[in-house]
Amino acid sequence: MQPRQGEMNLITDVPGLLVGNAHDERVRSGVTVLIPESGEMVASVDARGGGTGSRELDLLRPEATVAAVNALVLSGGSAFGLDAAGGVMAHLRAREIGFKVGPSVVPIVPEAILFDLNNGGDKDWGEESPYPALGRAAAESAAADFALGNSGAGFGAQASGFKGGLGSASIRFENGTTVGALVAVNAVGAATFPVSGAFFAWDLEIDGEFGGRTPVPEDRASGIRLPKLARAGENTTIAIVATDARLSKAECRQFALMAQQGLTHAIRPAHTPFDGDTVFGVSTGRRALADPALDLARLGAYAANCLARAIARGIYEAESLGDATGYRAHFGMT
Image (cartoon, rainbow, N blue to C red; front, top):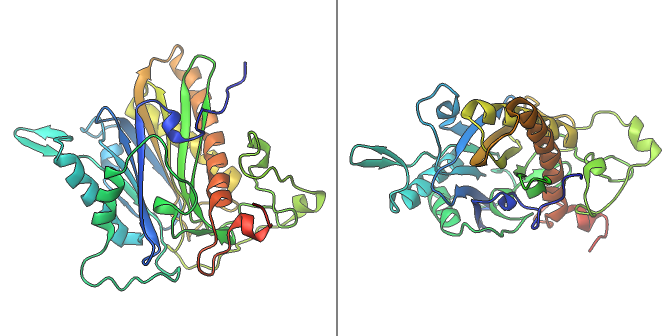
């Protein structure tokens, strides 16, 4: 039996995970937080491209001492957005969730950011950025169901010549093991064929989840396109792939590394000097692997598929905002 789409087709189909979103319409930016219901999850990361912006990624190295994280943050705002993790930390610390060091509690909250500063929003916020408050609000709103498109870290994103956005997708194996992806798409590369408008990830689509458009012969001869004008560091796709299979930090790193293939399948080109593409790999550890190497290979392959689908969904679900036209609006789709 082939794996099936999860019930909600969201990363939260992975049992034990919650997602919270918050955004500021005036600023045109936002924050997305992934939080484990148990208080911690195993995580690692794979980061590529010439403009990565991040916080606490060194803790995710397999040899690092900290064994688990308490949340992961995806944020707009470029380097200013790194303050969002502070708001999430404050939320978790008030609930005594974090790494225990004697009487102290230190929430472990790695983060990746994208650049949305030049999208037309009002970024004149003075000496205090909105991101700590957005991080706290996102954490407080964490739930199993959440909005896609113009939501959270995808609120101000622009991608592929269209409005970018927040996307998610999931797959469930016959034994119950689940894989999910969550992504904020802000890429400089294209995600669609130039003639038909079909997504590069069209061949992975399940049940018309991003419009059902298919490429035409002329599309396949198209050259490399950079539909979004950019300078180094002004873009980036940031993502999380997750599973309830029991993975070590080293295995989470391999899981994330394999998932990057989904990013390159859905966005062409990816990992450019203008992008800081980052993928976190997460395990909630609820299901043991029967054959660690073989099962990990299968999980990674489906994580790549989920991430490619989530990227297409993020653009498909986004609505026009300012000068950025939504995909469905462009094609007259309801």
